[in-house]
Length: 94
Image 1 (cartoon, one colour):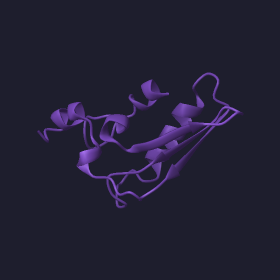
Image 2 (cartoon, helix red, strand yellow):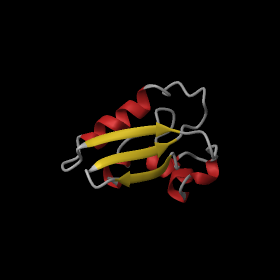
Image 3 (cartoon, rainbow, N blue to C red):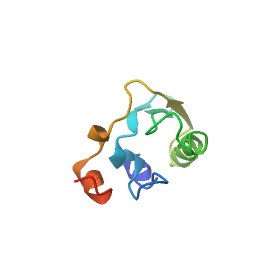
């Protein structure tokens, strides 16, 4: 799962959404339904509609996943502190 999420990139930065800290949680239930809680860098993000759909489609395509649901959340708000050190370096924030 992390491998797939690590291949989905923020459209404004050359950094994966996983490394950016946009993924808050990933849960798999007993029916192999994956629920992902994620956020965006801002509520005004231009990909607010398309990025969650992309995440859902790519996770749902994983062998063994029966369905995928993405819940877009704003609490806690995303900050650059959620980024990994590697992501900060790649984005030029260090």
